[in-house]
Structure formats: structure tokens, C-alpha cells
Amino acid sequence: MFASSFELKGRTAVVLGGCDGVAAAVCRLLSERGARVAIVGPDELALADLVDELRWNGAEAVGIVAERLDRADAAAMDSVRGSVIGELGPPELLFVLPGALDNRSWQRTVDNGLTGTFLALQAFVPTMAEAGRGAVVTLAPVGADPATNAVGGGVTALTQHYARLFAAAGVRANVVSWTPCDSTVEDAAFAALYLASDAAARMTATTLDVAGTLMRL
Image (tube, rainbow, N blue to C red; front, side):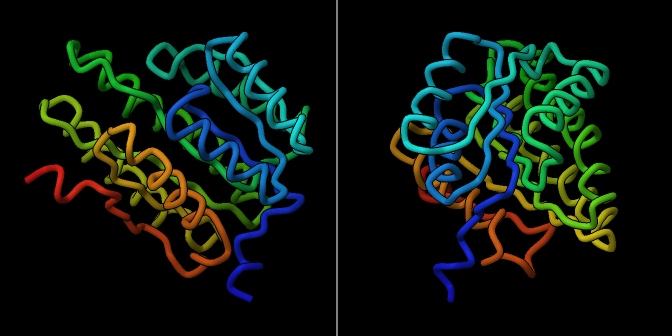
């Protein structure tokens, strides 16, 4: 029974974060478990390659070209939501998994990691609430620089806010806290899958710290 709670057959998942790293790993895990996957990113060729890979393995997947999260605005995110619904139907799962942050620029780091996450939650969570069901997973980075840590703290607080706001409507929202490292990409992806699945049906406003504690000491 526990294994079946990880099955996502027939559910529509939206993954924002590009076509590599944790986002790509999550896309592969979702497709293996039967979800329909809408991958959102700025690189049309990379999107096409990942979509082709997923379809080759029998998944239903589409790529939606959109600006990077640090360049997005509310109208752009609403357009992404409309494209997802038009291609695959209303989403039940949302993953906001921005890639490596440009910690050389405070503004770009905050825009990509925090403002982009806010815009995604603002666009997609009310749609899930209308349907009475949904699961959101965000990625909160932890790094050696103040901008990345500020984003991680902000994403965590923002996700918890949405978890409280929409709990009565049947929407869960949880966080994967992650110290970016190639060797822990799969760990972060599995944690995200778990939080989105029925195995975590009673979990909301929760943060899972993946492979980060020892690396920070």
C-alpha cells in the first residue's frame, strides 16, 4: 500500500526550474510514476530534448517556453498557467525548483529564487484550491552567501504562508531545503516527490532538509 501512494497516474504536474539539476530529476521521477508533466523553462532546445526523453519512455509531457523566473511577471506566469491547462488540463502538482542562483547579484538572486516562487504560487495555487486538491513543493536553497540564504528563508516562509492560507481548500505546500551540490540532486528530487505524493498526505507547511546539515558545518 505504501508503494502505491507514490503512484501519480493521471495527475498533471507543473515543474518550473529549467531542464537540468533537481527540476530534470523530478520530471523523470514524475513520468516514471505516470504523471503528465508540463516542464517550464527558458531554453527551447533543452525543453525539447527533455520532453523527447520523457515521451520516449512512455510519458505524456509538454514543454512550455517561458522567461527565467527572475524575468517573469504576474502576466507571464498567468500565461504559463493557461498554456498548462490548455495542453494537459488543470494542474494538481506544482514544483517550483529554480536552478543555481546567481549569487553575484543580490537582485537577480532574490528575483529568481523568491519573487519567481511567489509569482508561481500566486498563479497556480488558487486554481488548485478551486478544484479542492493540490500539492506544492518549493526548493529553498542554503548557501555560503547572504543572498542565497535570504532566498531560502523567504521561500520557506512564503510556502508556509500558502500552506496555512489554502489548507482548508485541500492544497498542501511543503519545502525541500537543499544545499546545492551535484551529488545530492537525486536526494532533493526524491524528497520533492515524496512531499507531493499521497505518502505525505498529512504533511503541509513542513520543511525537509536534504543532505544539507553536515555540509553546512
